[in-house]
Amino acid sequence: MGITIHLGWWLAPLAVTAAAFIWHWWVHKDEVTGTGYGAIGDALGQLLTFSAATIASLIAWLVWALAA
View: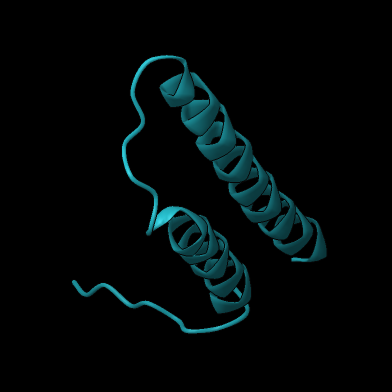
């Protein structure tokens, strides 16, 4: 019994996913933790970019799934 992993078109959405979440990290890598109400704005900004990365990843996987 053996397990085989075929490298193929699933690497394309994987690359999009990795790029999207690396972009999210890159945008927020130099931020200093805010205090008070500023922390709320920082959290909302991170939520927005994390949501954009997640949506880009999901769209890439959906296109891959529908094309397969």
